[in-house]
Amino acid sequence: MNDLNVTEESLAQLVMRGGIYYNIPGGSKEEVISNIIDSLSALPAQKNETLLQAVIEREALISTGSENGVALPHPRTLILEDNEEPFVAIAFPGKPLDWGTPDGSHVHTVFLIVSKSPKQHLGVISKLNFLCQQEAFFNLILKKAPKNEIIGMIETTEKIWR
Image 1 (cartoon, helix red, strand yellow):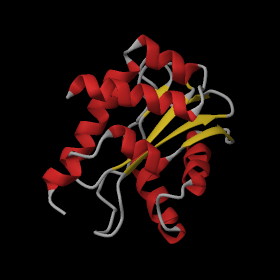
Image 2: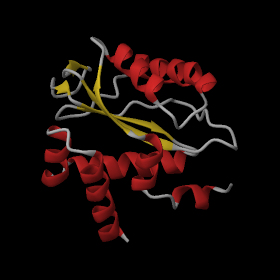
Image 3: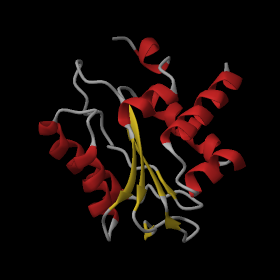
């Protein structure tokens, strides 16, 4: 698959593939990341440990905590095989937790990003950052809205981008 095809996939499609998860247990970012990965159906189960190691290694370099209670964990290197699809999982920890965010906020929403190329990765981060700055979308994630509302808002916003 070439890079052009990979980047054309919508954020909504990536989230539908990755899933949205509620009340993820864990008292640390490592526990929450592990529990998110254990919940995934987007990857074969044997790949979970590889993903967990890669995300924890990336997190050890510098926190992926953003501002306003959002974290964007991801592996530093590409880990997907040709037959594996990229995805974004949205997860809501059971309780907000310290993630080392620049503004000191506790994280209430985690976007786990697993991309197929650097170009796709940067595009996803850019879209997520934009969405999280939009009051309507931010309010949806803050109240842990149902999956259909979150995905619907992403789809609506993506139509504007086209």
